[in-house]
Length: 534
Image (cartoon, rainbow, N blue to C red; front, side):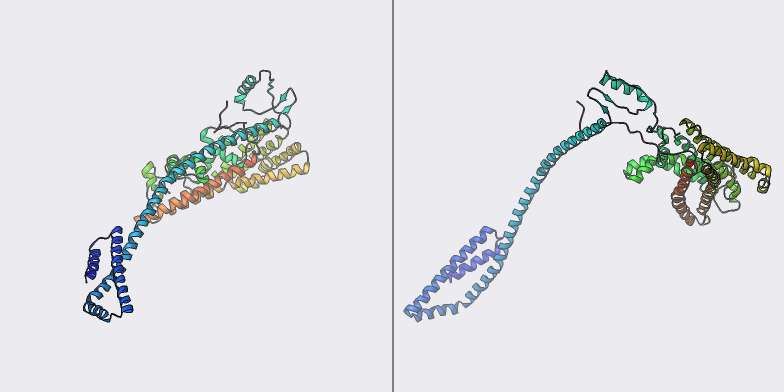
């Protein structure tokens, strides 16, 4: 009975306590001790029953068991509770303890890892520096070795020649004399068979056009670099096709803001670089579009009083300029005039290219070969005279075509002259005849190719008119206006107009004089990033 009471007390204590690991172990030891006592006593009684047959004692124990059956059952029940609770709590505590230990080890590893990584990175950085240094040294030595292979050498002398920019001739001589006082320096010119390299020099504002010219091909040493001329003609042709003050203003502001936008958003990549480098071209084309837009009477479309009288459009142009109508003409209302202007642009642009060809030939010392472009210039100017006569109010097409005097003076004689001069330049008659026919056809086709100025100009005017649809509904008007202006005119038509302007220069104009077979001048330089000269 005392034993049972003690066990029950232990169980009550175990339930009341917030058990720790040490307490649980103490309780388990106490229960084990009591269980051992009970087991020993029961074993003794069994032995007594076996060997002494003390039935009376067994009966007594049985009576005790019967009398204390409730205590025994309570003991069994409490034991079951203890067995079910204690292991769970014990395992949970052990589990948490292991988690804490694992977490502590993980924290220690994470604390140590950055230090280890720093050491590794530091080691790699040192190794990388050495690798860069060694790589640069090897590259420099290889470059010098390749240069030595181009020298003519004997045991006592070394002979070499090189091209240098004219502005640096004296500097190059001084460097050679300082390094080798006994050196003999001879400044020679171009020899037969030489092909001097080309170094293009243009002001910074012309760099976008220089890249367009170089994309076609570098000018050779005897060619005139057409970059500066293109800086003038390209925006004019673009402006004729994209004439609108509002749209030109968008291009102008956009071109001026490109540096800030690119630096703010850190825009990088091949396409972004092209746009950034071409910002001056965008600005110049925007200015040209503003000028021709003023002449066309257009500010985001034909928004002048004269046009608004017959069409439901705003009067932004007139409000801005104070003019009731276009100072020059409206592209949509004067298509024939626009066509004549496009042909006149060709008549001035193409002969200018032929003149440059003549200069290039003479500059290269090819006086005999210069006869071919001279004859072509004669023929084209004569043909242009016929075009101008046809466009004049005093003449009609029939007046010119059926006038034998005009045809003889301005078509037949120049054609025969071009054939004879080509014969002198080329020598072979069949080849000269074929070349003459080609030039005659090319003169006509290239001239009419400039009619794309009319086509693109009218297209721009139509899109501008479309952007003004829905003027009666403010919400619809602004939605249509912004969508057409931004996506169809500025983005789509702007790119198309640029492409056609480029085509007129590359195909119709450059073909008259430009070979573009130059070799780029690449001066011998040693660039050092990781090494220094000692």
